[in-house]
Length: 100
Image 1 (cartoon, rainbow, N blue to C red):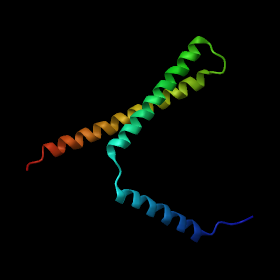
Image 2 (cartoon, rainbow, N blue to C red; image 1 turned 180 degrees about the horizontal axis):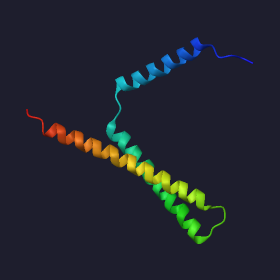
Image 3 (spheres, one colour; image 1 turned 135 degrees about the vertical axis):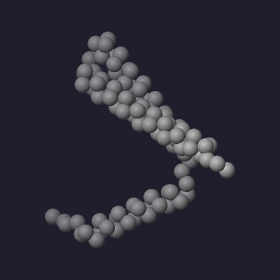
Image 4 (cartoon, helix red, strand yellow; image 1 turned 60 degrees about the vertical axis):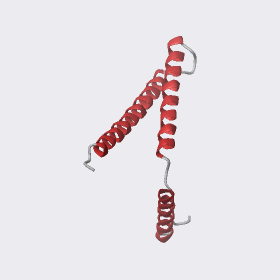
């Protein structure tokens, strides 16, 4: 058995943190990030609807648990996206209300 040396795990953490800092320093296109998230939420909702439709039609291999989990995943993803939108809108309104 090989043991993990604590120093190696610390080095891995430092490397992953430095990579994260490099990504932050180069900047992330917020518009692109939001667009990707909207696409993922849309995909989850379509998948959930498709599974529900298959279950209603009685197609083999689609269980109630699978349909419910897919529905909950799409609901949670949508709610998270909605919260991000609300926070961004609130930040925009705060900036617009600042005296110049």
